[in-house]
Image (tube, rainbow, N blue to C red; front, side):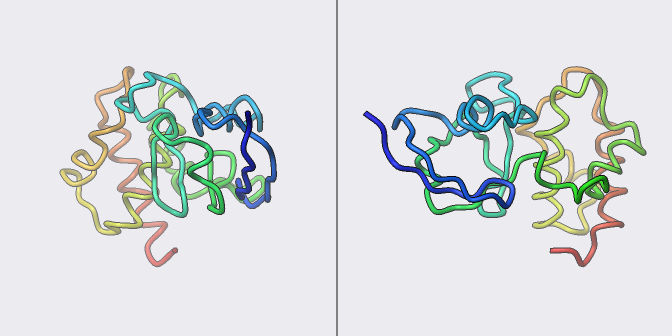
Amino acid sequence: MSSALQVTVNGRRISTEIAPNTLLVTFLREQLGLTGTHVGCDTSQCGACTVHLDGRSVKACTVLALQTHGSEVTTIEGISDGDNLHPMQQAFQDCHGLQCGFCTPGMVMSAIDLLRRCPDADAATIREQLDGNICRCTGYHNIVEAIHHAATQMRGSP
């Protein structure tokens, strides 16, 4: 049995039939081919699957795809403007805020939402707010620096 799903993903309207128990992360990766959203733990602890749902970060491994019916979902693939990286992506690159890259998409998506909520976040706030995102490669120093750097670029942006 399947159910109708209408959702906008990265600005593209999608109408499809989907099994009611399909997770958002599975829908994005397997049905839409948006593999920047990673499956890291399946328990919502690592944050590698973080996307934006109606502008707020969510862990796509904890959301059923059908729960997004009528909503807007943005993945890491949807935040750049063509060849121009989003300021957060650029800051991660400039400040060496990535290592293997596995956690990076979720980290970037969480960081964008963090700065939307706390545009003047200091290092302590950034570290606290990233509590639900795990990077197994770094000590977070460059990630925090990247987010702080992006904050200066993003101030005043929606």
